[in-house]
Image 1: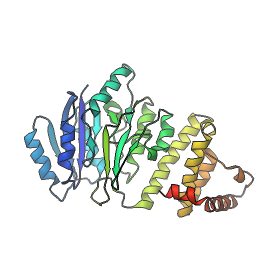
Image 2 (image 1 turned 135 degrees about the vertical axis):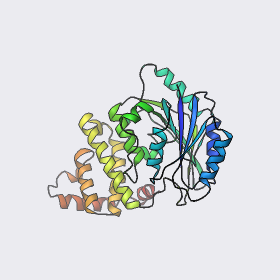
Image 3 (image 1 turned 135 degrees about the horizontal axis):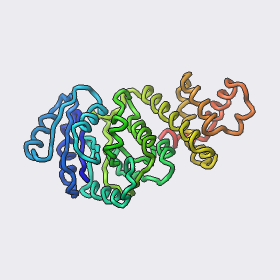
Image 4 (image 1 turned 180 degrees about the vertical axis):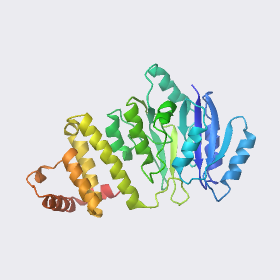
Length: 318
């Protein structure tokens, strides 16, 4: 079972060497190639990549992708890879030595039932703090809605089935954000079978500078894209798992309230429509059921959100 490691790289001269060494340190013999895809770096990223290739020419390939964006870089690496399974690895993240071997062992236990991907727990390093996110063996589509909690893993922590990636044509290069959520949703539609890895063998480092390949420069635009992606998922759950949201009242209510808080911060027409959609498909509070007029329903929802407790507000803000 061969694995290809694909590393998109944009202005990561401070991180690339450490990242590649973590890939080279994998204890699994089936890692046959490490593909570094430079994405128009303006620092010494490409030069460092070429030096690493010179030292490990039997394993490392270096490509250049002129189309800007992590999605385009990952897709180029995917097209030029040979592995049956794909390990995506952002150039500022790290793998612990036994990561891939452990996940391949999980796949071997599945035998003939090949999953779309392995959802994995992660170690996150952000703002000088380190914390762990855990996966939960639950409805995979519902896990996507709670992906912010780490329940759906992470692009670099998960291990991806090459055959399913090829069927859906990899990442959507037109999306400015939520690419990971979109990718997993389309893969699950193709093959809903998953595997779960509860070990923390990946280190995801969050940087604050604009050079980070996944840095979010346009918060409002990206938040809108995220809500659009979640709308697709909610509709799929409602249509294919009747009564699901009614059975998850506590989790769904918390999720719904977080959406309401965001809509309150930015009451645009799109967000008003999103709220109405959530009321219809996911969770309708009892105090809205008597209002037939949509404008009154929205006004009441906003006022209720406004008088929510300070503690709940601060929790959502963080």
